Image (cartoon, rainbow, N blue to C red; front, side, top):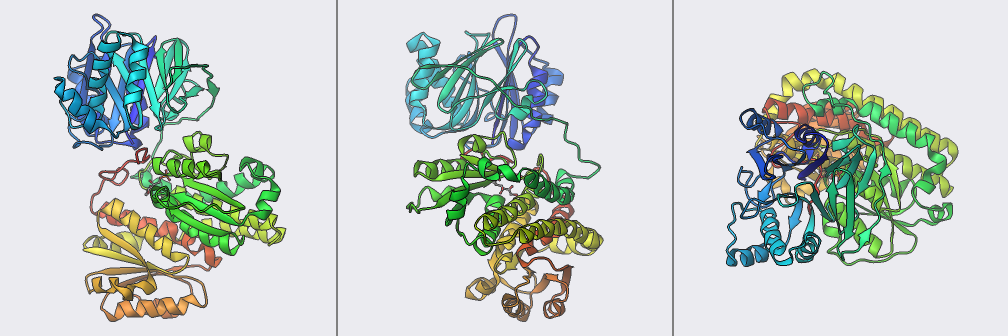
Length: 614
Ligand code: F6R
């Protein structure tokens, strides 16, 4: 969510901090701020602004502050509106302590009340400001930096990663972590601090991921690391090279469009790279061949689009690999009773590998003794470090907030994995495994060619029409039902038009009351011979109520094609891969509606790319 970036070193800090924040702006763009130590008198100088980094840059035109110790922040609001007063950095009463923070201080109400009684004056509605005032009190009381930090972390509840800048200790930054991610990069006579190592990729490859419940005193050439009991820990910088090339839109108007068009290659890469590494697959997943052969139950967790990918994949694991699969919304799982099952494995699906709800779910499952795996895009993420094995999806950096290519890569990777498990269990032959890989490559072509086939129609004929809709209903059955959920999510987040996905047969149990002549109903067909006629019957029920029906049908499905007002036809694929074949066109359809409405497509309001708060 929010991003924290800091610098202590031989150079002035602002250039690095601003570049780092820009790279991490996917984490939030409600407001931005920068603070640094004034080299003349060690006072803390700062500036902040509403909105993204571009607004903050304008502040520097009239107030060009800089210093050798600096830190910055972009915010995704949790406590208090997206205003300048709530923008970070926040301060204590004397502006000698400054903080930038990612996460939530859950007990801030009680702490704030206590501090207000002691006379502390608050300037914002944030939970973060409480930490600065609390630290002011503790520093006075303890008169020693280390014991004040220790006292501070013992009073704070929640999940957080923050950096403190202290006028009385002008050559260091204090970095504190509980649950939320933060890492430190070591350069030559300089240290970089960031919520995501992408901020300093290309500057150093020596990285310390701050361990959970630890704090560090960071100077230009040292890191002193302690845990929350005050025990000093050894500092090891791992060598991790994350390639950084400035993200370019490649001639496209938005990153989202670029990412939609990258999907063909992403699916190809997912197949080829995983295949190239297949001899190490079980090792990478931390499983023995025997464990795979005996596998009976998968418990999959994820959020949003990743959860939809998991719901699609449930059909793969059950029908291809004969493994009972339960899919949970990560945010709900921990609050349900847990039933331990033998021969079961837990899988987290996540693009970023940093989603707080998914991380907490996987920690919960691990505490219950489950073997945990991550299917992730970002292999340097917390999720990979905290699980016992991982499968990369090879989508490459996804910049646009709405997930597109990560979804198709997840579906492709999970289809491949289901076949690998089935092969290991001797349920399918090597030939069938190779055929499945080939099916994915064919679908990758179809995903792109259907966009090309219909793009002009969508732009010229349909986007304007559907942009006027009061709301839109998406329908699917079997494997296309979770896909209908994904389509509805994409439309909501990008166009701000309300949309919902339903299993087509469920409509008559209530939601059919929503249907009238103004409401577009979009139906995603299936290639199942039993379900297809039933889906046609559901489409007829909708048409009978005067709805405008849009069908994503497979070639030759004449009954549905004739019924619909608008039809997009898709070539035949393996029935389980129908949603993947439709993915590009569905995303493009949503993209054009949102573009017609003039929405900020790559950064929809109120959202952030990496959701690191629960
Ligand atoms: C929607 C979207 C989100 C994410 C969700 C999980 O377009 O991007 O719903 O899918 O926040 O994020 P990851 O996959 O990073 O765990």
